Image (tube, rainbow over all chains, first blue to last red):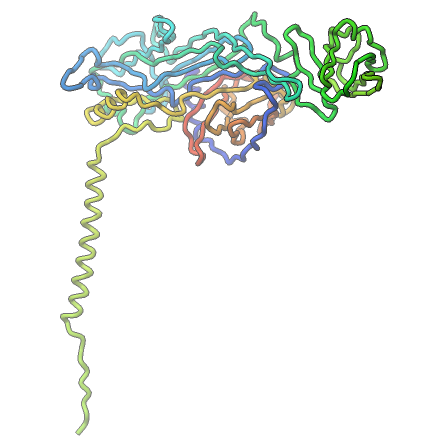
Length: 319
Length: 181
């Protein structure tokens, strides 16, 4: 019943081409991850074009210079390879529910574990991966569809950039679990499949679902604000691996830093503790290291620095 | 004596010449049309990987297309548009018809413009259809076409990949749970 509903839904989706406007192509902020109030999942999935397959009841594709291979008769062969890859910064469980639709009945085809009658319309579909000989999808009993779930490891994101040009949270796309899936299986060799050479079709489709794998520890994208480009106040904030946040002011004057106040409270001890650095016109300090400053709290803040005998006030807004 | 003006009447021979030419032209047109029909009917059927928005199509091998399929497999002709990088949030909460945490982007790794449809699984009702989302663009707020009663709904989100002429190429379907407050 579920797969019959899916078939009807997917057919309706292709037909429902209402008039649409084009969403303006907006530039993204630096980095591959946007800061929103929820985790963003980035998963590569196979499209229906990647699910095309060939049914060869008579093994004709084996004919090459007259060398017929009867073992090729009744085989299902993929046109290509389906790829799933996790680019998210969290582990995910990916569920894939595969089913085959028969346009003649607008219903799912009962998938079999093995062909038991060569003259009936029977399809024993398998989906395998390159990582293992155990099929990903292995129908054990007649079923309208076959689902599988697998865990995909997260990808690695690293902070790149600098205070002058800005920081970015960049994906290392060589990381993250990748799964290559291949369609295979067998069909009834003696059944007359000729009706499916023209208007009648057998089509393979899948519905995917992904959820965060429990125990995945990387929550960075949820707790750390994404780096932003410098504002008119000329500061940049970026998350550090140790959970602190750095604020870097690029427009500080030249000279020796001798005093620091934050929101009117003197924090000179932070200078001597080394939590504040001033070098080549760039003033940097970490929030949790400058204890009690509250500069990480949302809202407007004022930092007063004495550099080279000159008192300069810098303002910024933390979100 | 009255003058009688002799009018020369059109010669039957000239008229029949025009008719002959017309007939020949018509005959030539018919011959060309017949030729076209013959060519079209006897043109070898090539196996073309057609766009498959409804699903990956199963092609049955017959004596008509076996050679073409063998060639394509030997050449390992790549199938275009076989994958799509989804970039989205999966916890969509709606207050009334609008969600502030629904997020969908057409990742820069993709090559096709997309739009998506959102269906209620139980009733198969289309409750939202997005605008076209070019590569690199994103959506941060979604307003459903209808207001739903508070509750949890199982939905099907179908991404449609389209070409530059907005022709449907292929789809990716994702099961999504939405929460209406």
